[in-house]
Amino acid sequence: MLPLLLLLPTLTSAACPRSTLTTATSALLQAYTSGTPSLLPLTPNTTYYENDTPVSLSTSLLSTPLSIAHNLSLHDTTLCATATELITSSSAPHPYVLLTRLQFSSDGEKVVKVESVVADKGDWLFDAGKALGAKNRRYVIDEDLGAVAILNDFPFLDKTKPNGTSSTNILRVEGGQIRYIHEITVCSTANCGR
Image (cartoon, rainbow, N blue to C red):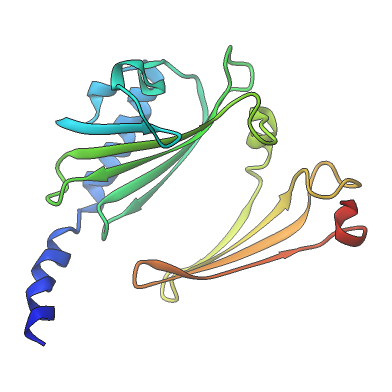
C-alpha cells in the first residue's frame, strides 16, 4: 500500500488549472493566424512533430499564417494537455484540416511537446469545405457519467447519400481513458452501397 501512496503526489502534481490551458489554446490560435510560434509558452527544448515526424518550429505549419474558419479546443486538466481542431478557409491558397496537441510541463507552465496531424490535398477524403459543412453535429454531454453522445450526418459513407447518412457515436471516459465507444450508422442500402 505504501508504494501506491508515494505515487499520489506525482499524479496530483500533473494537474493543470483549466485557465492555464485555455490561455494556451488562445495563444495557439493567435500563433496559427499570425505564423508566430513564439506566442506559445514554449521551453528552449520544446519538441514539435507534424504527422509523427520531428520538424523545426521555424519550418513548421505553425510558422505559416493561416486563415482559420473553424476551431475547437479540448482541455485535459488531469494530463496537462490540450487538443485543438482547426479548419482553414476552403478558399485559402492552401486549405488544411488539422489537430494540434499541446503537452505541458508537470507544473503546467510551459508547453514541452507540440504534435500536429495535418491533412491537406491528396489525403484520404480531404476537402476543407466539406469538413466545415460536417460541423453540423448535435451533442449531449453527461458530465457526471463522463460521456458524450454525438449525432451527425456521416459524409462520404453511403453512395446514395453523398451529403451524409445518419450516424451517432457514444464515448465514455473512465479514469482518464476512453472505456466505451459505440457507433450506430444507418445505410439506405446494404453496407451503404460499398
